[in-house]
Image (cartoon, rainbow, N blue to C red; front, side, top):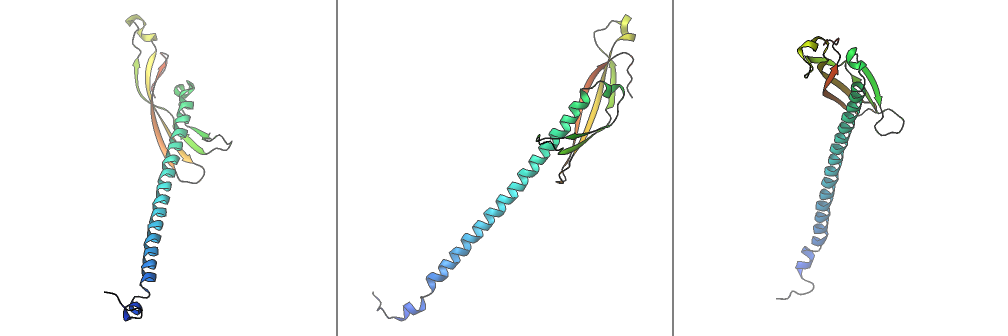
Length: 158
């Protein structure tokens, strides 16, 4: 059934398309806002993971510096390192390497009883490093590394 052009129906529904358009615009705006918030939180999560990975790498680099020197085990002492992870010439992390802690000492295998007094000793150490970000992100990572060092017969486990 056709309605006459000047009927009461047109007057009642004259603004309906405008209202429906505004509702759809609000729904789309809410979708965009939630997508932006989700993207920002994901970006923060990834940034935190990257900072933690960098700090772990800086701590591991400091541990490698400690382990590379035999003096670190004959006269254990705490050391501090400034580590530049992105090679821009500015230190990004400060790493506090604690004095290596001797866990155990045992005569090295393969030496006869006659030479047991002069046989080298296998020593087992725990090397700990704490890396802290100097850029102000608040990242701090502690890394422990176990090391076995063969030392001469005069070595002691202190």
